[in-house]
Image (tube, rainbow, N blue to C red; front, side, top):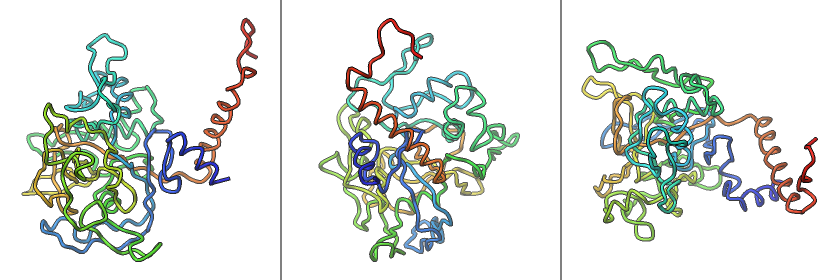
Length: 351
């Protein structure tokens, strides 16, 4: 039964391979990260930023790709102009039709626009997006104000640049911005390096290799960073365009496109920042796609180069079975309803 279900769902491109990624009500393709209590990273670490990090004591899920334009579009159409922090992204695959249009934001007519990454949203907007997912995509304003993060904590101490934002998500959060430990484990830790289930190996790049990645367009390079296409074409390369460049867990685009927010707070020169991980479009130094290449940003500051990959809790078996059962029921009904007998009689009330 399981193999038939995997085949059916893969045929619908809901997830592949079935054993790794999971369908989810959020619309995000998640991968489960196991190897609980894995050993922490021990070097090399030129920036002294990640040694001793990366051990995670629980299973969690993380998006196979960064959040796509299609996934952000519903959120922005619901809350842009209604709540603070939700501003128009600097780059994404949608167009603004202007005030009064409904919907205001629509996908542009560029190929694969729905798979373009989103950049230029602040960490706070990303946190509100996670709140919205936690609250089952409710249209109510309260859905973005709490859930994973309490928006009432967002601010700065008077007269300072010390932010007061909640440092880590609520313990019962269903979706959140990954911590640095969660992010680097998903990108660089290999649970099967010595054989199935025999891990303990940390790669230095998020492509299960220690060889520096080749920057270049799909078919020529391994990451969307460090090159230009006339007319800004490198900004229009869809997520998933480098399918053979994967982390040991099967994550894509851990290098290139946008650098990604984490929720981890780091202090540099006495100033607190949210940690940013991964390279972005224009980070062109060879060998920069390494585990210790980190940055930082204030949570209120949108950046041309920063995006988001969502983390999530592993659903209980009962929850997963209910959702998959519902999905299979809809699939079977659609299959049966290909026949004329499934069509509703014209002129008769539906019982």
